[in-house]
Image 1: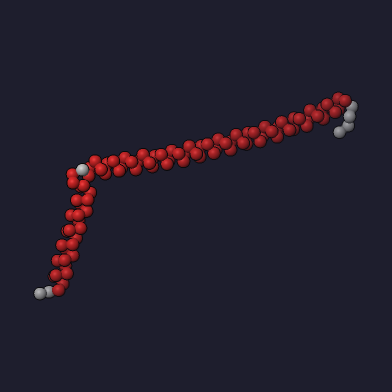
Image 2: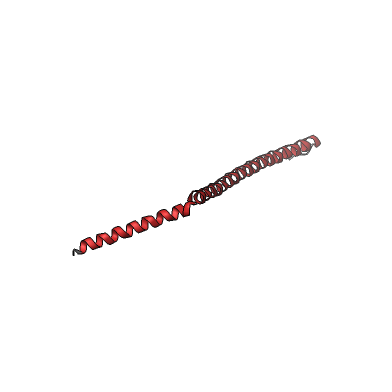
Length: 97
């Protein structure tokens, strides 16, 4: 008896057993199509939820940064116009700045 043939036979038997076991696992007794499609739909919904939430978050951050920049620019303009008004009033009253 050749040892090599016995070893190859054992590996062949084991690989057939494993591949059959894997096929049975994915078939799930005939309900595999329903089960795996439910997993796929769940994964797609969760991934979409994460993606859309992240996109919404980024849009909100960008909007807040734009608003902050506008507020900052308008407050600088307001301060400058307030200083100009003060100097005009002082000049009208005859005061020197």
